[in-house]
Image (cartoon, rainbow, N blue to C red; front, side, top):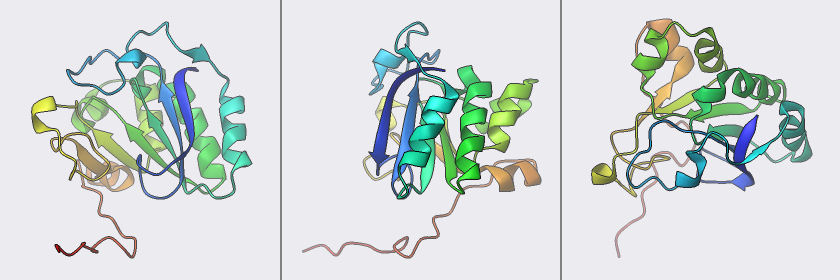
Length: 175
């Protein structure tokens, strides 16, 4: 895999402590992107799926794997293999993409379908600077959706993910 970076203990790329792999290469070039260094496909470094999977094994506190970018669907086969390694550890898998769920499922791409089938939550859509929001949970802009992929594939259309942890409805009072 060609990657830009790995964060071994992220708490912002999905719920719980996560291993976040930032893939290298992105065709979207969203204005205001916080990772423009990931755009060139030839940047970053080569890492094997086995090497990245070993990082999953090294941290017993992980709740999940997050695939971000760049654009993970440019390396969908390798990302799906890494996602399978995470699932073997009973970790959940989140994938961030600039494509929409409809674009991904409408394409005749077996590797895209394979990565979707290994993903629990898909954060889809391009980052839109004019819709940037710090209140958008696990997203950069409020146009992006948190999609429950297994439910969506079963339903044949996008089903939004609903947070189910005990603090999901907790709000901080204004002082």
